[in-house]
Length: 100
Image (cartoon, rainbow, N blue to C red; front, side, top):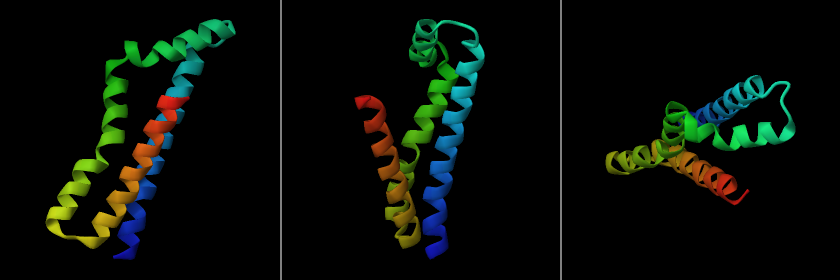
């Protein structure tokens, strides 16, 4: 029971980190050799121009909440703990992105 409760948030956090690293590498590849202003503008408009990447980002951030609700209905304590931590991670990440 304890192992599953720990694996869920770790896998969720790692998937968000891998996604962020991939997006960062894509932005760096596109702005290589450009001025700093161009790189900043491109990184700000990246999600506006790439609908698929925005969809993946939204799914990564919002997926733990419905899974948490499902775990509550199934009354699985290990899943409730794991998805609660993942949901809190998503909320913190959304707050960090929105206020920075």
